[in-house]
Length: 98
Image (cartoon, rainbow, N blue to C red; front, top):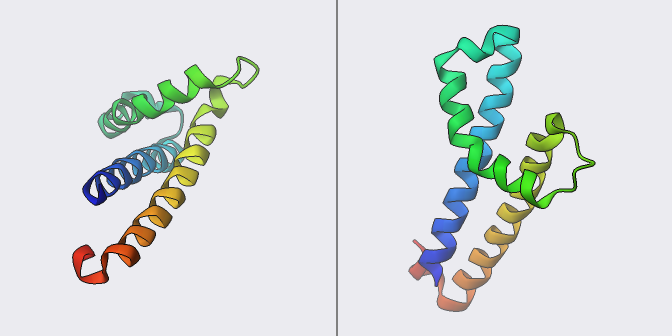
């Protein structure tokens, strides 16, 4: 069970990094970001989280706000997974979590 929590936490962290990296590179690259190879890689890597957020969010939310919504729920999921991991490590013993 601990391994499942660690894997889920890692996937959430990766998704968060892809979305944050996409945001920062979008600021640096400006309007020509669509021709940037690294932007395209980050865009493809962040698609699953953005797609899931678009599917569960109401149509009232604009497409330009979807990355912010995805980052928000990913951050909440990360905090919950960290709390779950800490609780499991305390119950199983700290030496198991090293």
